[in-house]
Amino acid sequence: MASLFIKDTGTAALATEIAEQLGTTKTEAVRRGLQCLAHHKATEQAAPTGSTVDWLRDYRARHPLPDREALKLGKAFFDSLSDEEDDLGPWLR
Image (cartoon, rainbow, N blue to C red; front, side, top):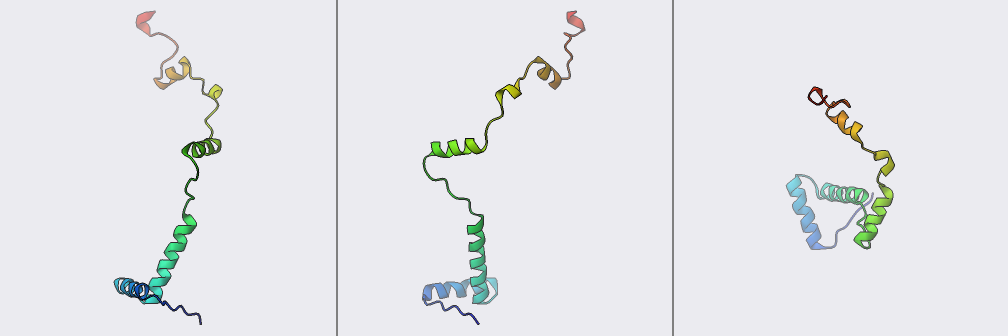
């Protein structure tokens, strides 16, 4: 059987306080706290290190912009947004 002896009286008192608030044992309070901390560390994203410029360069390398040639937006594209044909309407014929 494994055991954990908390030698620090402040920590033991905190465990007792939290256990009373949760309506559980000190062992369960400590277990929940450690599980919460383990989950937090596992899902924590690493904070960016270095300068902001380095972070932006790294971000841009991982998320490149689309090719400018693929984004050629001409009259046909804008006409399609308003469902207009290439004609100028009956009033300008």
